[in-house]
Image (cartoon, rainbow, N blue to C red; front, side, top):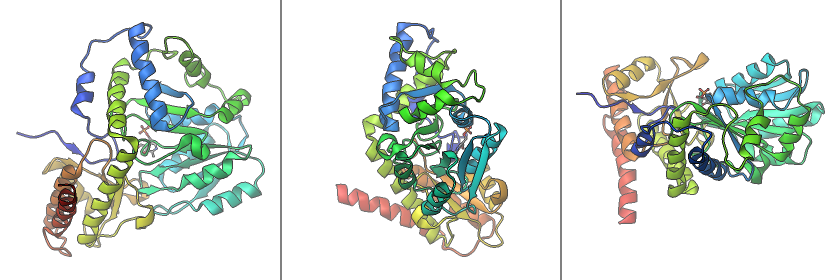
Length: 389
Ligand code: PLP
């Protein structure tokens, strides 16, 4: 008998039972008071998780759809934008902006590095034409979190907007949308929000709405104003048929996060990252990024010399039913990524580390003592237990 796979991946992530059961209900029509009530609650709770007073728009799409939408709603062909990239998802923003004919200034950092915000600000100051800046909050492909607060606060007092991909961070890593002054925040349902894949969300500041008014890029399904207008109605809905079942799911996912407390959720993820980093250290494995900017939701670990890390990943998946992920693009075969995002706890992580040890052993990695990493994680958990008893 096999258990369902434990998703220790950077999305999709496991679902709480309450979220699963919310999806087993009969479909209701979306132009009804009943749907309006659910959707209004979702919208109010999204604002809390986004830490904004502005409306958050909901789309039936994956995160990439909302990334594309955040380019087409604010700019016109030929506009100059700066895209800061530290990995695969930053590169995706570059490709999207180029696809729509924007004049893209690329500021790329090697995979595993963090963006240097002072350098980014220098580029902005020396290019007066820049109308918008795109950056990834948490770069899932490398396990790096960019310090976007400084950039946001700088851009707040300029005539440029900041667009942030928070697909893998929102709800798990602090992002004070209004306080810091982030104009557009994009996220997806399948990561820290503990919901299934299929919904994308975007918050839009007043400053960004001014950019919308002059944007000439073509849009129909993605036209933000249509979604905003439907949120301003008495019974809120979406301009096109919403993914009713997914909205029910996210309604429950958001409630669970807010009941637990947003701050507590940030701390919980930081703790899971700390435990994973500790395990890597005990296994004599190096993190891809420096510890200071290693992500709270995903830990990227370098493959040790002579080890087939893809084989390790496959053993964990096929033999132990624990799904972790490998490297993307040029990092394929060079790293393993352990996700600790959403509905996973310390015991899921403990099991993951145990199986990681066994898989490393199976592929012949010898530079560790079996049980050391697991013991270190367990002792950290035990410390907490004795402090709280
Ligand atoms: N941006 C980041 C940081 C991501 O982690 C992902 C997905 O992993 C995306 C964008 C793309 O999201 P989706 O796969 O939902 O289109």
